[in-house]
Structures are given as C-alpha cells and as structure tokens.
Image 1 (tube, rainbow, N blue to C red):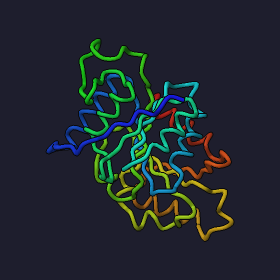
Image 2: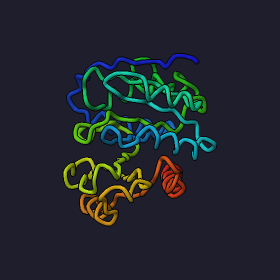
Image 3: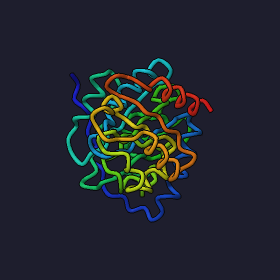
Image 4: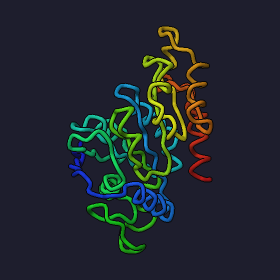
Length: 238
C-alpha cells in the first residue's frame, strides 16, 4: 500500500487568525468545498465515527480527510485503508490547528484552488473544479480545550464526545460546545454499562448552545448515523 503523505506543520505567525479563517471560509464556499472540523477528547471515537460517516456519504461526495496529530500516522492509514484520500498533519507539539495550518492541509489533500504551502490561487491556476474533494473532514487534535479556541476556517464545527466520558462534559468544557454546530454523543451501545443520562447530556449541550444539533450515535453498531448523515447532507446542499 502507498505510504501516507505526512505534512510537518510549522507554527503560524499570523496576527489575526479569525480574520484569515473568515477569508478561508469564503474561499471554500466559492470553490464549492465543504470542510468539517471534527473535535473531541482522545478516545471519543473520532476516526471510527468518520469511517461510518464516510461509508454513508461516499457515493454523494468526493471525500478527503486531514488527520491532525502531534505525531504518528495511525489514523490517516485507517482512512486510506478504507479507500479515501487522507493526509496526516503533524502539529509540531501544538494542541490545535489554525486557519493557516488548514490551508496547508487543503493543498496537501489536493483541494481545488490551493497550491503548495496553502496558497490560494485564482480560478484556473490551481486544480480544476471537479478534480479534488468537495467534502473534507479535518480531524483536529484530540483535546477539549485548545481546538475550540482557534478558528480553523472550516465550514462547520462538529464535537464528538462519548458515553464513557460522562454526561457532564458540556459543563466542564463550555467553549467547545458553544462553538459546535453539531454534537455527536458516541458509544451509546455502552449506555447500560455507564452512569450516563442522555437527557442530562442533551440539556447541558443546549444550555451551552441552543442552536446545536445533538445526535446520539454508535460508531460500532451504526445506530443514529442515518439521522446524522441526512442532516449533514442537508447542510452541505443548503
């Protein structure tokens, strides 16, 4: 099997990441690319959830995945083994990605309109429309603090947290849930084993963010993925 491409990211020196992130979102919209920033703590099931989601959506979109970690290429290899283009982003010890790092990843994954180094190029000078992925998942570094503080420029933020983590995560990490467009509560197949109240969890998510959509799912069994993927498709086409 072909080796996964690893991109070593250097610390950005941009003074205004929020401004650059807004610009990146506009660029992506103009190029017909929908990017989803996926955040969670380590072990919540980001990669397994992505694989389930990709299986549901692969016939409707050209999908690419950017896997961000401090080191290793374990997750990118799993995505590649499923037949999906993936690039591994090494953050050089940083616990998050920002907009400029996302740009570098877009270039590496072959997104239309992005050249080496993450430089946006005029239409016609980069990859031709229809060649690169039009749905890109960015699996952020596993952390419930830092990734929420840095806008990646993606079209949407998704938070995954799991039943074994407890139903109080939205209380303890408010910013993460305030930034979320959707919250996937994963590993619901383990509900009988853990002291986790779904009503309490949902209530706390909505207190932090009344506009967040909450989807109880099981990446192991596939439960809940029809609803989640149907909603995501509507958002992409909307």
